[in-house]
Image (cartoon, rainbow, N blue to C red; front, side):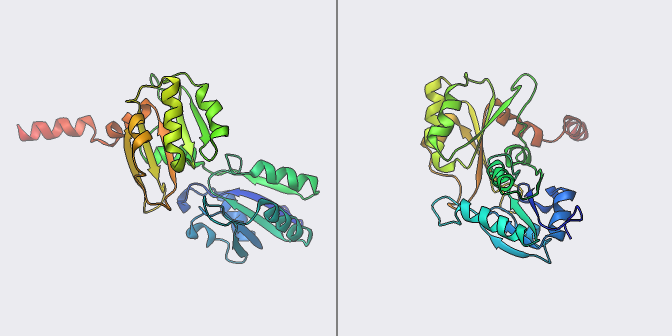
Length: 260
């Protein structure tokens, strides 16, 4: 039976950034009740293991690789739901943050398929936080902008509209476009020494953070393996990571007193 007691339901579920501990309770419940799970490439095996009674299929999309067409994914969800199955469409991060959740919801609605949305922790917030970087901070950034780095025609108009240092810029899926992204901001007048971080494979054992400047982002080779997923964070808040990771001032003072 589906969670609401009826048959035939699609749950659009956010799996968070990768760590099973960051999965919501609602998402875990839906996975345990699922009969069919269609999951993205960035969903961790530990999360998929929760769907112990379901058929699970990878339908993820990775740059430069063959993937299941979006129309096919939608057809499978509709067909399975009409057969009375509880389908979980499991997405990395949040379904409504660059996850095509809106597209799938509209298609399900048009087909008369009942569906629900269970939010997840977006990598746009989690990746910076796990790297010790707050996306907002009083006196440094009162807001942040999230863009997809896949297509220059999509992100360029947004970046070109930002005054230098006016907000933290978070770029998802943008490693291959990092030079173009840097050039776009530099041409807009952002200082070349603007701080930048790339949080790679956040919430996984392979997590790693590269830091540098906007100018370096535009001319450096990728600091991460080809298969790594990276979130680019641009702005003064990047500098806080070093401060937040340092020992508390009280501990440092006590250490100095002990040496004296």
